[in-house]
Image (cartoon, rainbow, N blue to C red; front, side):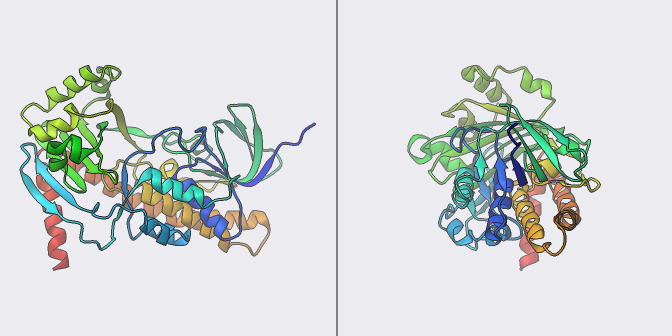
Length: 392
């Protein structure tokens, strides 16, 4: 009989958090196997720009020994930000001051940086988890069955597999719930050349164009290659999204533009003149303060642990910090038996994880309400003005 493969540390999910954990472990001479359901790194696009924060994402990159390489890949000028009303009136316009507090980088570029920093056999592509069970008689050991038929065991199972985590049910019955906000996502390529009106309204970095009375926001950012990535945010029931056939791009655009009746033509153009189809996304979140009791041999990081709305800008940053902090905790606990080391490391990691993620989840929930409140964009403008006064 062929022996079942065993991996001392198995990370389920090859996103930014899981890869950061694997990289920091590797820096400390500890190898882990990453199991990713995608068949390869270029199977799908990885989303738009990310702003990487000093207090979490950049800390993780320092721990991974990748910060200097990261600086060579950022979008210089991408920290610019502007707030508009529905008529295109500019209420706030910030230039990128080059202080690197929140430099922007393409998500796919950042993921490639992490992938390239790992041994070539670290990531097991095309590995979709079908089932997980505890191995009887082995405290903390789990057997993982893959959809393609393979099976392996591990003594430390790390769920880095996102909002709909297959690992989370081992430690928690919580499940993400709809926040009441949906995004419609699209791209406009070659902004300055092909879409000068839309590029002008987008600006050089992040855009917030809000109309709280209608529960709408046109959000977006200019990407490193000059393309424009846009999200229409709408406070609505999930049935509204279900009522639109997004395989019919002209029809879907017409439905969105009906919502944007009376908006500035440049803002409307971000939808009307999109070069891609429109992709609907429900914004879901776990309860603020989600936590779990210690379960031997298992823990979570990133969205698997604390998926939240994007309105604090912390999702990717927290996932990376989670991965780094978990890896550092594992590396720091090497003075007893393997099982004792593992459990001490997981307990130390979770003791920091829970309050950190709860604070960010509350900030995210508050940000959602501020951006879609009836008086928006008033609250967002006032928040930045208050920050200005604090630094004076």
